[in-house]
Amino acid sequence: MFRQYAGQYGGSVPLKSTARKCTLPVRVPDPSTKMLPEDVTPQEVSAEKTEEFALRAFFHDYCVISTNPSFSLGYLSGLESMINDLGWQSDVAKACRIVAFANHGIKLCRPCLTRKAETYYQDLLASLAEAMNNPATASATRSLIIAMLLGLYEMIVADEAYPGNHQAHARGVAAILAIRNSPFDLFGAVQANRLGYLIASDNGTPQKFDMFPAPKPKAFCQTLAGLLLKFGPLWKKADALLSNPLADTDDLYQLEKEAASLDQAFSQWQDSQAEDFKPCVIGYVNQRQAGSKFETGHWPGKVDTYYDLYVAAVWNIARSVRVLLIDLDHKLSNILGRNYGQNTEHPEVLLLVEDIISSVPFHLAEDLPTFMGELDKNCSTIKPGRPVGGLLLMHPLYVASKVCLVPQQMQEYTRCCLEWIASVIGIGQASLYAKDILLKDA
Image (cartoon, rainbow, N blue to C red):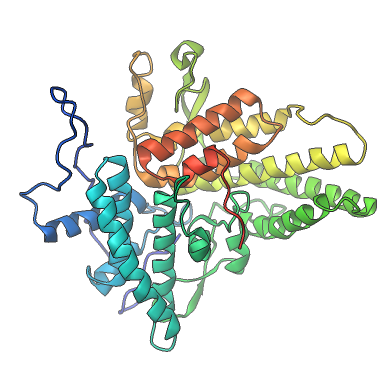
């Protein structure tokens, strides 16, 4: 979500990326002895090189560079350029390495890397606390980025035994994923960033930009950022009214009217987008290819591709909001005596969740065309792509897994995908979402 970093001479810094995919293999038991090999990094790689490879692996795994800013901001796209300015031993670079060591330690079954991440994490917490206690000398931008990255680390290492110090970094995580403390509050950070204002340069000067750039919509259509700003207060209002058994009926009718109007506005936003910004069907998974278990990526139906992961995430944010708004309207209808039933499937929700599910292979596969071409093979499984794909996908999947208007089999599939993101991609928070283990608000 960062713009291309503005360097000390102003403007964007041209950069040839040093991103490099981690090539360490998964640590598995020896077939003859059934014993795990020694948990060490390769002896031929020096400690200095290990640190370098970790940082370059982070750039590969989590930075999405946009080639067209009018379509996409990318994701953390200016971070590598910023680190080149600050130095590879800067605290921002250390925070990136913490994320890389933790993520690869989990998914490659290499505890030595997760222990290294934990040690660095504790050291950096102290440095961050010192910086926050001295705001006159600290860089607000760097402190924010470090908090974001430490929040991402907490999401990676979270599990049932150690859900993570989520609250300590909730604001950082919110700035990354546009969420607050609840998986349903996907959009609160938009209000915090005040209609697209976000610090993007190291001198602390706010720079205005559209948080959700897209081809200019039709005149009657509002921007996505503007719609999300309306959703936040409405969702809080709904939470207060629905939790109050003495809520005034007129207030409930008014809320129902506002929810329906906002859902219509989101629908108009979707319809108004340029064809190049919309998803494109790359193929289909038929019933035979899907099998009976519906493994991750094998839900029967269409498979969509997008301009990039950022654009896919923007579409899924809009879909998730609409699912929540339609579900809210359904709950209000029941409360107001229309008696539609608690678990009635809704055709529009079905279409929206199908679109979210159709984006799963694009988010999670390393090579989507290869995956599609191998669907007829009995052994066809998704070869995992970059962790950022799972990171951006897991909140829409969580919404789909919780709304009663979504068919049970679809809900089970989204939970299966969340577990896959946790076990294969190595983001532990996804498993908590699959099991519906939520962290209480502070």
